[in-house]
Length: 434
Image (tube, rainbow, N blue to C red; front, side, top):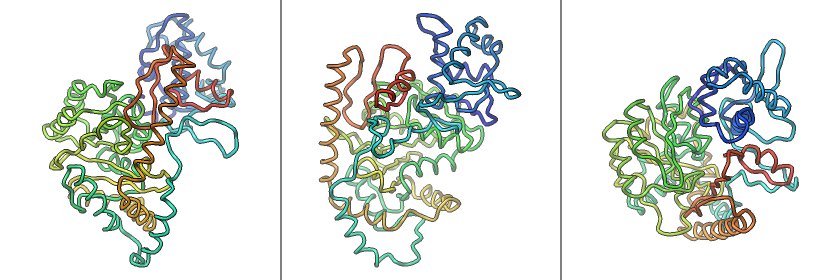
């Protein structure tokens, strides 16, 4: 993940050094450097069609010989990850058949395979629709005449806002409908928060690694993502606090439950500590709870918003993971004043989430825990199968079996995930680089 914005499609030596991070490893330096650049291209940290620094400039920035950068660039040209064009220097590219991000300035999720292409796609963490969807949709159609006015509800239908508020209250966070904004999926809520709280040059603190489309949203607002490390043990809260003090971000975005992609969760003490940080610094802290319902082992996580009184604490939720991704319904839970302001701000992009989709969401929520329990059982079986096969077939790969979520974060023992993602497709499997 990079904190650098590349708006003019050129990156300097210092900027590229920051993107590459700790790239050195045993073996030829030029090969290690080429691996790091290749990984950055495949993950989207180094956007496509971006002009890279000259060999001499990069050598000076990295503190290596020009022979090292020349060798790395030569290897990447042979592979097709760099292309030299007369008059425009050397730019990043993807060789034919490689899976990678779009040519935009931020990392994006890899696309799913076309129907019937025979590829096993492990890049999209999503499940098929639940068996209850059709009946819920039929009931929603029956309810539609009661909501057949002008159809515009920038804050969301009252009936869905009430259902979501009841859901938070039942979890231990007292909530009223005016504290809920219905959005067109969780990604819409994230983008709305980013665009209203951050502008060009503002800092937004994110975990590293994190949900890549949150970085997309920050960069689309012109903001600069500032990373804080996270891993199997969770987010480094000491570093989070010092980072917030040092860079004065406009927003902090965290995934506290079954983190995407590491699978870690913040404990109750850590959540309270983050809420206190928001109170002390006045920084808005958003917790993405899209994966909260997908607890596979142990008790459910503590509510992110606690008692719900924090004026700077925002929770983001969605129907996508707990029910179905094709139902583009999400929400944001926060102070009523913030909800009203975001409802006004969204009018420049849309005038509300589709009414029928909201009614389907209401019907699914009315079913209670049943559909979610079925989803959990399905995911638990898949997780255990995957973990068992990895332990049997690839015993040198290291991972922690997550207590929830939809991702398995694997340590390959070397920085080769980008090479693996490029090679795996030739063997019928699509995987995302780390």
